[in-house]
Each structure stands twice: as structure tokens, then as C-alpha cells.
Length: 526
Image 1: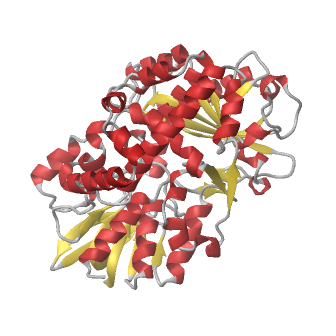
Image 2 (image 1 turned 180 degrees about the vertical axis):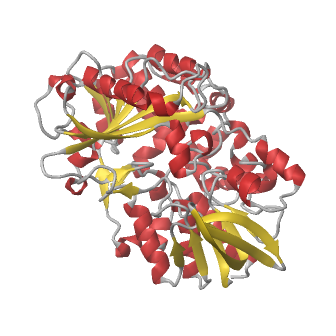
Image 3 (image 1 turned 120 degrees about the vertical axis):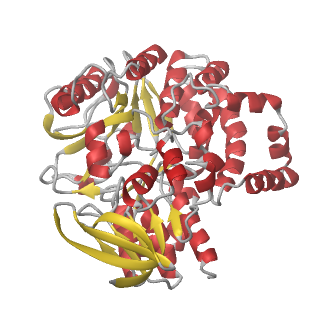
């Protein structure tokens, strides 16, 4: 049996972040990864479509640039390079040659909005100033364990030092908007149907529907992108986790891929972890005083942990995971989509998340179908064309088109099976792209489809929720995933949690991994 100071279960970006900080501090760290490659949902593969580097999880990196992680771990020295997405989002207006471009520059964004609505341009400027200040305060709470006292003290400090913060947090109307559905707040702030739809589809990316109560900050968070922008890792999203792996190994850490954890059990004053190939064969064991689980919270407590306390197991089973989230189809294509009948070639909007959603009613219809357990008849799409800004992804003259369709249920109510309808549902996503960009008809070379079922199989995303558990107010901050698990420690000494199941949730953020590492180091007296 090999001995380590800490064993991390899962080599997603949060697990690797924790392991990197611990190895940097001198601890002997082992990371066990079930798949053949590190990265979890931040991973890029070159073996899916020959000649193409395909992301199998997230594609856009935003919030990690607001944390100290990239700087602390000096990932640029390990091959990580970022490309700015500017504009970071683009809403093409169907049937016209125009659209709304969202740049890191607030002025440039407002200039774009003013072309369709002078009122909404000014309203957007006020929105960013108001919600940007609000979310800077909220963001401070993301880089620490979310106890009520800590959150209250963080807000108090900002209010004491900053008059604008004090004014915002004492505003009953701000509180009302935080507690309101974000769809309602959008209607209050903006007038033009295209602006309302663009903001609703952007805000929907965290999961809740526009009608969900207490979701106001799903809209408000978009203001933060004018501070950090959005970026692409050169060579694919997985370039981030590959750089983390190189950093970890340079500090003496060990990574084992193809190492599926079978059981985690308490042994003496530490933990015994059994692992082996998913296909069977020899089972090996390793021992550590501390274990960090970077997999789904239900995977840990309902499958891997031996002798889990019965009451805790019951509570974990009741955590709301939901019924899926979306579907991803990655297309190798001959050319880039041209919106509004524009000339061929790379356009500024090709760096952006392209928001293809004709109307609020269209978006709501997708969610109604989802709520009924049906694939949406008319799915909304986020299209992404990163080969336009990164030539390393494709063969010369070819491109990648990623399409993300939201509100696709994991469990279908009509008796269909995802393996049988995958091609049909991917066709729907591509059809919407062609509706906006007719030049894309007949331009598909090959494709890789990730249905909700495939997301669970490949990435371990239980019921295909890319945020692990629902991002609703009752499962955020000190309630995520449960109050007794919210500070990254578990009731079992030496067993810790990290990843999207924990505060502050999903996305390429690394805040959870960073926070967990600080908690473990404190417990280790380092």
C-alpha cells in the first residue's frame, strides 16, 4: 500500500487546483482519475474526429480569471496561453443584417445596443454599474468557505469602506430584484425584444428558467464580464487542466489515469482508497491521512464511501440534482456561419458565444417541453466557433462549430432513449444555426454528440447536470450541497469535498478547489 499525505478523487479542474496548492505547500499528493485523460469537464481530445481538437466539456473560461489561481500556480510557465474573446457574446437579430455585440468594453457594448435602442443602451450601462458593484461584493464571498458570519462580515466591510456598496445593500428594491425571477427583472430594465431575449438566454446558462423565483442575480452576474471578459485556452479548453497536471508533477505530485476508485474507507487515523481499471482486473490500494473528493457529491456518499452514516446518506440522496441540463453537438465544418448574409470569412462575432434564440416565447417553449420530460421541439442554441481565433484546433481551411442546446431532460417521459434520438436532436441544433446562417447548409464533415446520457457516462455528471446540483437559492452559499457539507469538510475527519457540488457551484472557476486547499492546509497546520 502506497502512502500519501492527501489523495484527490477526480482530476477535474477543481481537484487539480486543490492538489496543485497542496503539492506546492510540500504535501505528497496523489490524484486518481477514472478516465484516460485528466480534466473532467475541462478536457480536450484529439481522438474523437481525426485532425480536430474537440472539447468534451466546457469551452469558455470566465470566472477563473477573477481568482488568484492562474497567477499563484504560474500556469503560463507550464504552457497555458489564453486568447481574448472580444466580443464575448453576440446576438444576431434574425431577418436583419445587425446584432448586439457584448464587448469587455462597456462603451463599445452600449454603442452596439444603441443601434437598436438608445433607451436600452443607457439601461444596460446603469445595469452594469449597479450589478457590477453588487457582484464584486458577492464574488469576495466565493473565495472563502461560505459561513453566514463570513458572508455577513465581507458585506459589512464593503459597506463600511464603500458608499456605493452601502447604498446598494440597503436598497429594498435591490433585494426585491435579487428575490425576483430574472425574466421579470429583464422586463423591468429593457424595452427592445431582441435585448430582452439576448439577456434572458445569457442568464439561462446557469440553469434556472427565466420564471424561477430568487434568480435575479443570474442576470446580474453578467455585469462581471465587463471586468474580466471571457477567454479561450489556446489549443482547447483542456489546455488549462493539462497545464495544471504539469504544474502538479513539477512539484512532486502524482497523477494516475485509468484509475477508477472502487471504495473509500476509514482505516486507523486515515483513509484507504481502493482503485483499478473500470474494465476490472487488479485492485490497488493507497493510504492517506486526508482524502479530497472532487467527484459528484452523490457519487461519493452513495457509491464510494464505505459505512457512510445512514442519516447523511439519506440527506445526500435528497439533494436536488434535477433532470438534465442540455445537449452538446460538436461539428467539424467546411466554413464559418455568416449571420445576416454577410461576406464569408472571419468576422468579429466569431470569437463570441453566438446567442441563437428568436424570442423569449421561443426560449420559454423549450423550458416547457423540458418540464414535461420531452426534448424541446425548438431548442435555443449557443453556437461557438473558436477555430476562427485559434488555428491549432483544426486542419487548414476547416473549422469547428460547437452547439449547446439547453433544457434537454435526462429522463424522457415519452419512452424514447437518448441513444436512439441523439442524431435527431443534434440535427435540430444544426438546423437553428442554418436558420440564422443559411451558408452552413451541407457544410458538416463529421460530428461528436454529447446527449444528457452521454454526459453522465463520460464525465460522471449525475443525471447530466453540468452544475452537479441545481443552482437555486436553497442550494447555494452555505446550503450547497447541504449545510453540514458547505465548508468543504465532511462530518468524517480527514474527508473533504471540492468541485461543482460545492460552493460556489459550476463553471470554469477553480474557486472551490482553491477554497478546499486552504481548508486542508489549515487543518494540516501549514
